[in-house]
Image (tube, rainbow, N blue to C red; front, side):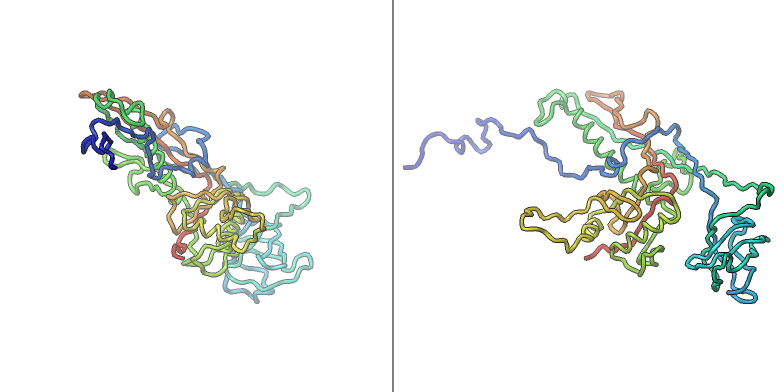
Amino acid sequence: MAFTGKATFSAGAALPEIAEDVSDIIGIVSPHETPLLDHLGDGRIEAQSTVHEWLEDVLFPNEDAVNDTLFTPDATTTTLFTVDDGSKFRVGDQIKIEGSAEVMLVTGIAGNDLTVVRGYGATVAEALADNQKVLILGNAALEGDVKPANRFTNRVRQRNFTQIFTAGVEVSGSQQAVRSIGIQAELDYQKQERLREQLRDLENCVINGVSPSAQPEGSATTRRTMRGLIASMVTNRYQPSVGPIPAGGGMLNTVLNEAVLNGALRAIWEQSSARIDTIVVGGFQKRKINAFAAGRSFEPKDTTFQDLISVYESDFGVARVVLSRWVPADSMLLLDSSRIDVLPLAGRSFHFKPLASTGDSEVGQVIGEYTLQVMNENAHGLISGLSTTE
């Protein structure tokens, strides 16, 4: 027999008689994580001006290159040849050509022309060629000789600019007074949401931001923006699709593999004392790194299939692999995190600033001002132009 009593479906189309059942949990799916900022941590100092500057220095270089196409009498016996920069050499230097076993002794320098003893120390003379790298092994002084001429390097001042991140918040008095589902105070909730957005944007600008080409310090009409990591890379920018990565990167290859990665790591290591400890990639290139471990075996007792590389260890350092959705899909950042800081302007880290209200509302803004310090840009690297198709 059909039920004829009172039921929920007989309480009216809008169910006016039944209490609402709404979960107190608010679901948010929009991306707001900041894995690179989390990895780098808080800056070790604060910026003291909207123009943040730092000093960099280098040791006197110990390599150069042959700059000579005419060898007299020939490339095997000549004792006089030209290099790119003769000021890097001193009389008494032992030198050798990269890839050669011959050692030469510099006995005279005139501008960029070197006079040398060939086959020094019973080594065998080998042919010279233009653009070959010349390695300076070290200098031998004469006993009791006068001091050599002074040589020194000049420190270089680098800079970046602070960028203001801000978002407005305004909540009516009525909204503040009513009981909302899932939150205790609407104003606090809005602060939290805007802060998440600003942190997300900060990480994005740390990776991809650029400074204006004119008036980077800002003006009444020019917004001041920081230069990000990708824009900071000058020396070690590699595009396998355009030319092979030096130092063993090998053939042209737009697909990320270990030869490409290790070629870049080696090239950075060879010309700096940096140790790459952070690899930052997007989702596609992260899957390519995971594929380095393809072909691994599992035992019958294994119940979990792991297809993940979180740390990559090579001859040139141990690097944590950081997945950030803000890195371009065709790119990979190779970083020495000890030389990178995300700095707030003093007293201007993210905070809520209450503002005067002109009506029945609570008004303010979430605001912060930050810059990026990338010391020794040649201690880091960027690989771009990688394939983004399977």
